[in-house]
Every structure is written in C-alpha cells, then in structure tokens.
Image (cartoon, rainbow, N blue to C red; front, side, top):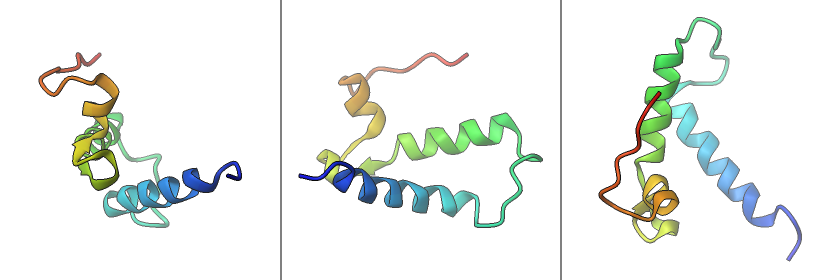
Length: 71
C-alpha cells in the first residue's frame, strides 16, 4: 500500500469537520484559545463509523469512562 493512502481520506474528513466550525477564509488570530479547545473537544468526542462507533478519545484512552484532565 502506498504511503499516505489512508491518511489522505482521514485528513479530508477531519478538515471537513473543522470547516463546520471555521469556514474557509476564517481569520484565526481573533479566535480565542478557549474556542479552539472547545471545537477540538467536540470533534474528538464525536463518534466515528470507521472507529467502530467510538470516539477518537475512547480509542485513544481505551476506556469509555475515562475523563481526561485539562490544563
């Protein structure tokens, strides 16, 4: 399998999710770190069919009841 084949689809899907919150031409300088963190949490806690209907966080932490601490 050629390198990057699977990553390309993943990147396109992730970019599409990000664009739901920040459309093209969005100026990021005025967007607060808190807003970016909020969007990141929403995306990482959204279930994915290709992850067996689990969220990215569930797969990463491998425990459905785990709550990550935030800084």
